[in-house]
Image 1 (cartoon, rainbow, N blue to C red):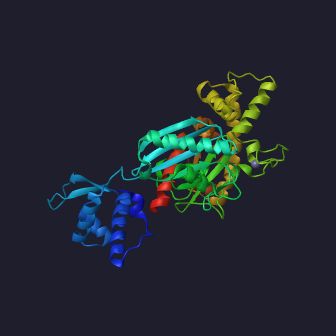
Image 2: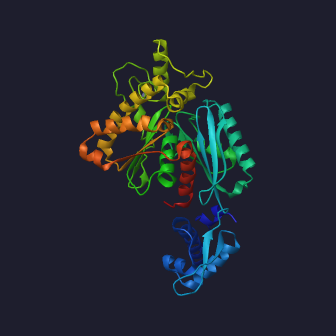
Image 3: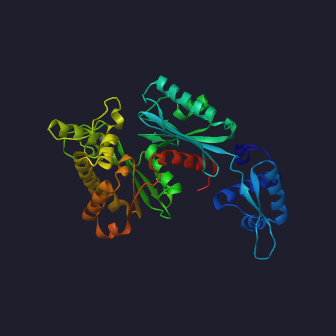
Length: 407
Ligand SMILES: [Zn+2]
């Protein structure tokens, strides 16, 4: 029993065998997209006779792809059986690679976590050694999960920066000129691998499992160490030509002569981001301002979280002052996105979302002040509900979609 085989269309079959194969696939996809069903419901939805569907369902039950949930009452007084996908018939691995840690989650086909590890210690470097360490971490996580490797349909790995998902290249981390990164990792972990930009995966997580209800036009802001956006238009992730859309943080907006991490001067991130927050905090301390927060020099890429915690947990005046000023500025530049995209929902995600009203209120006021009235009226502002799990959940949902073509 392996769902990969059932979903594989590259099979050498006669026409009648192929039709039977497609019917079995369609039953599985119907159960996944619309939930549990009786034989009569499947027969109606699939436009196939009750005896044919019954035969296919019996096969799928005996092979372990489906389970019988027992009898249900219906209006005619009969009690037909209700069938469900077997949650253990396939698994998806979602992985988020941060600068100082890796988070991994294994979900069954009903999007339930069977194993999750957030923030496993790891140092992301552009070296072969770091890449091999990463693959070792993945292999250990898979082995510890006790799920057989051949039951995992695929893996989605989120990395920050420029990712070409179609070709499987990462241009900021683990870049290899001659070979797609997905091939190298796939060889090491013996599973199909998909690469995704971290912010886009978070956006998709919120879209499928998080704060998004029925909205189809959504901007997701990843306001963390860096700043990026995920764009959903008409219910689909927007990639752009090569997958580099959403680099909002590297819009050169300011004449401040400050060098950005990307090498350009005056990007949005130079004044509005986690790393610029850390610089602003240091400058304020050097000018003699007081704060209860002490930055840990061993965890540079997490220092902004200490300032965010300082505002939320300690109500530290300097921290509150810095984050609210940044959020006001962020709102001003987000208003440009509202004017361009006219979204119905703007989701504030990433580490700054932990600030709650300290971020959301200044952003809301600045949006009202700077965006066009009609555009502002259309948009609802919400905070991410998945928090730091958004990326891992999104990665699992993306690999599920890729493999099952469900959404
Ligand atoms: Zn930049």
